[in-house]
Image (cartoon, rainbow, N blue to C red; front, top):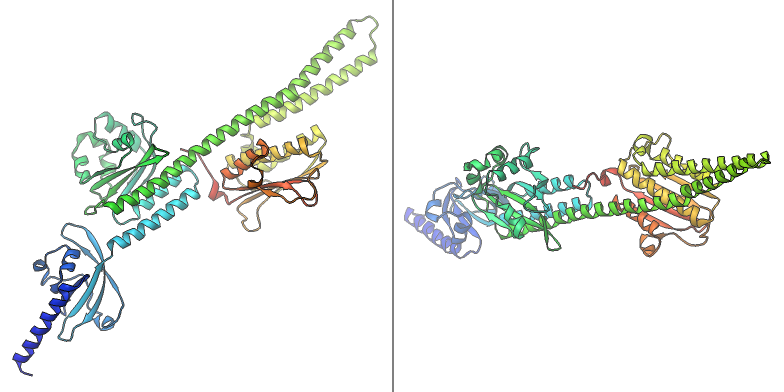
Length: 517
């Protein structure tokens, strides 16, 4: 073939390819054997964000060294491209070898797809962290970290406040350096008159988007107390999203976007979803706090009734008996045998009153659980009940209380045992009860507690919590205590006779709840 013929064939091939390139909906480019752009279609120009005349002759992000492997196949590769405006794009491409030399590259922008995958993963993990919530701070710290796992966001904060005029509470943070005094520094910025844009979110309940925010903050002397913290992450633009519960703004998520990243509609939708999960976590913690307060109020009322029914009655009887003894002593013909009998009865009344009072004092001081442990506290309570009522109570539990429970968990378990034994004495007409404290076979880090008796209830199967919604406040209180730690309570008659209350709690790492805020 002559040189002229070869040149004509090459020109024809290039013209045909250019036409095909321009008609393609995806990015399509022709590269030379060194990987430099020869031509790019309009779709490819839009994806790369660079005019074609500036692309030609420059090196592409595509790897052409393996074209002998990928030629003619459907294998897809990935590349990263940084546009002139600093935005990173993630490209998926396939390379095919051309007959006249060079390669053709079909490519598409998968940046948004990858970001959506990251966001969906973060949302899923955030929902899981709410379901497995431990302390609220730990939950929202984890949620802030999930926000930062997306490519676009460098740092995040989750804050709450009851009133925009009050001091904010920092509930979660990720992507910053040392932040132990963040709230104090922020308060100082407010006093200096800093323009804190996320306060608008707390006041109006609407998102705030501020582009190129970091340079403004770093140049403002009013923000000086926070300059060190705010300069730690590499960010530029800023978004603040409200946390809304039943129409009320309870907090905000602040997201700090990496330079060149755009807080567009899909990213705002992601932040809105994360804000919903954070709001659920805050509301759940508040509900648990209110539930605990209600339970404490119920306990005080119960103690007041018990004081009236036991100690007060004993003291009243003691007073009557003392008056009778004094009247007998004032008689000249006092019968010593009657005096001895009255004195003995008075001594017994005082012993019973003292035993009841000690039991009530122990109920008022659950902090003793920290010193004695759950098992010893249950044993002590069982011995006190047995002495007072004659009910035989057998406590089966690990020796030495090796359960190592948090005090709040131990207190709720103790209260469940206490309420269950109270019900046995009051309703079961039983002569024997048994308390078993152990770990489930399938989860040796969890806890299983059973309280059973030989009283009424023969021939029926135990029912789970949905079966006794309308039953006594005692059962409701026990159920709420179990569910507070993600546990489950089953109560009801046993087929062999008697009644059983069974409580199972998951591993302590899953339910150890500290302060709600």
